[in-house]
Length: 434
Image 1 (tube, rainbow, N blue to C red):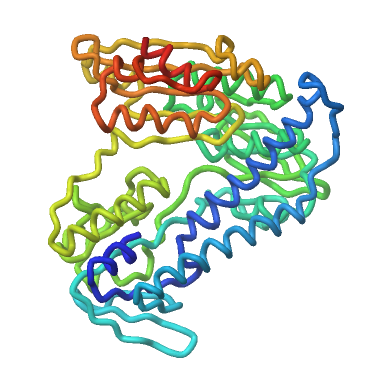
Image 2 (cartoon, rainbow, N blue to C red):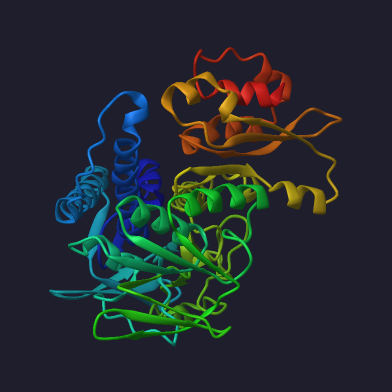
């Protein structure tokens, strides 16, 4: 995004990439996992087809065909991105870049080193799955999330370690595909930093689908046996499964970038930035996962858009991270925008929280997707929409309406007076606003 915006504004742009144009975290994490989610949702729909008047088909998923589809999607997106950049005159170098000075870099390619002088630089090298010291990833039994896309067959019993966003998404995926799933939850609820009511709705769905939750169990070991893997927790409990999936965060890819040569400071591998994405060296910017901000593709893209304009002298508004829309692609989907209800209360904000269950929505009932709810948070004095949470079918799409309301500082009356399609899921937003 930074490259294409800068090029459109007339800058001479060089982009150095060592793996895949378009972002490894985006094309190796986000897109493949959401492709698997799409297939798992279809499988759940097939299983629930009887209540809609169809005979249920219990055909198993073909993981090889699914893996081929994921690879094709990622490749097509990368090639399309490359074509757009080349059409704009961006110089693409496939290699590994590093700084050798505050205005000089070197790209190591298959053909040799290329010297690159620059006025402005951007560090946007992304992140990779974190592997703890007590686990040895063999990509067969003990897996990172990136290893989960090419398994070949559905695991008999998948043990997922990590109950954050990535972990619960993979729990939903493998449970839908027919695996027995055990989730180690280091605290007392999944999604420990989210609304307790949201976590409870997701846990209820997991339990109904046979997922076993080990709460208060922090993994400290994973050992491959003759026929599976044994995971041990710090409270003495252990669980045996066929595979283990590590979903315990990511690490920034800033090693060997020559940050010191450029004078760029880091903090535990992350590159601190100001509100305009500048590092401590004003003409060197950073964006994406390496900054330690919200690790979302949408955030990285917006950072890139804004910093490109700022670097070229345009006036830009800093990104307000409290207004970022987020989604968890489990089943049911979970989406939110603005601060959490508890965070608003902790900040001393007076809030009004209104909730409407999807069970009262006509479209939800018609589609057999009654689970979940809409919550809207507003200021009782000004009636300004402060945020909201949606749990249920298509939550990731519906949250866009609330995101627009938060960004535009709209009042709840604006939502109430907006005539939505009937029947539609969006009607629940106006009802909650009302």
